[in-house]
Length: 318
Length: 318
Image (cartoon, rainbow over all chains, first blue to last red; front, side, top):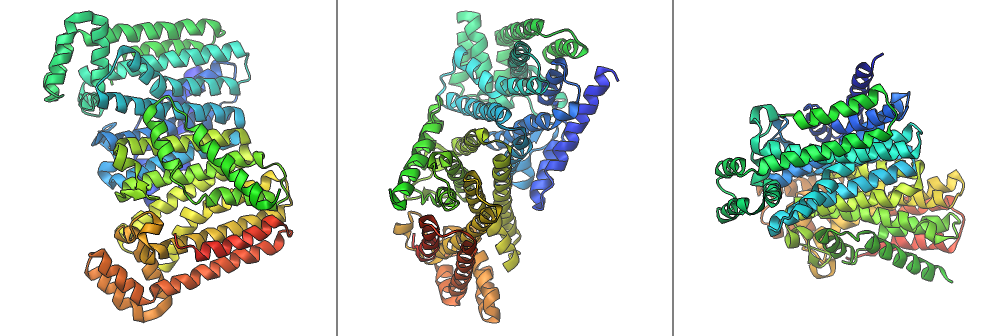
């Protein structure tokens, strides 16, 4: 079987595991969980786990499937809670859980999915659970730092980097690290794959922030400017502006003066400010670092796919 | 050292561990976590873990302290999320997290505490993590079933029992089970202590529901009628009424007709309905079952303390 077929079969197993594990007697938990789990996410975190396992020489993909399901479950749980905090009405082209079931059940569904992460991971023992626990803690810290910084209005380039490292890169890294460890490879290869995934996570998040400004809402399955409206895009903007020097400061001031409204006007200004282009350059730099990390991984079809994934992440438009 | 001193020292270690583990670089998470963790909860779940460990013959309490901290952390995480859903302003005599820091940070603090459970438990390996994962899942299922039943207005005595078993007794049971397992005792003793804690959990929750109707708000550190306002007390009321037969149905109908408002009037009616007395009898029955389970545990000062705890739970007024 070629790599692509192996990978697709693995991802299908991940999806099957995700659905089978949210089989609760409490109807609303099962319904709401299935609603979000079947809404067709990109499954990039499970891919990190599966491909790292394969690139590290693993031969029995079923070993890593529950871990791959668990990292997607963590991500899904945080999406459900994020959507409550952001008052988002659509996600992946479907209504958000809180817009269908209300806030109370959305909050509980997020908690439920998080408890299911725990169930998926429990059999793996201490080493893996420590990695996953740390990734979960960093993720929540990143989300909180983002909200606190947006509220205080004191975003800097360093804080932006810290936020995306905590909220996105940590879980990417943990996914690849656990996958590589399960294949029982050399420590050097584990570290290389973890380093790759960490940098791919940064790349992914910067591209995500760019798409919030310049993306096509129909392709994205969610409104553009949504993050901007939550003052997240400002992060990217100010980030870009700091790279860009003084020229963009005027735009930042205009945004602050108008108190983030109307969003469309801000988006247009952001597009014109050069911030997007600067962010783009950063994403490409992080992508280069991800590729460089792969030099310490023995050549294989899985490694080739990891290289290709960097391009896919950089080129994605949804 | 006598048991009481050992236990107090263990609980002090649990508190120290709870505070030391929420040491985040992200200020709001640390501040909000410390705010709730230092608000003086009853720590009954950690007591379950510590006393079960001692009653099962364990001799090195530090083995069980992180588990005892973890079960309290689960409970604390759910309190933070509950208070969001219930719009509660006070908890244990202090302002709730969402009333001080707002809903977004309260939601994230709950997630953070839940991730910290994971960190505390990770080193214990698969057997313990499976027990804890299941307890967390049941807890969320219980909270959800409660909210769904209140919303649908179709509470029955059986549903009430299922809810309190899921949302309260499961974590009590897991606390004692993990404590007993860590002491490496016979399976029979593990099961007896788990059975004890499960029934004590039911006792505890029924008494809690009674106190919401007849308690003194100053002693409780929260308003009475708060659960009733969330339609939870109705559960207890209807539960009592079913025991009580037709006589109380009129009260239930009056409550429904008035659509739960004003709360004070309902509380007064509930007190007069006999529902509280019936619930009281149920609590005593569950307390008897808890005591009976202890017959399979070898006599010890810790077992004597577990007996005493049943009385304390039944007699508590805050």
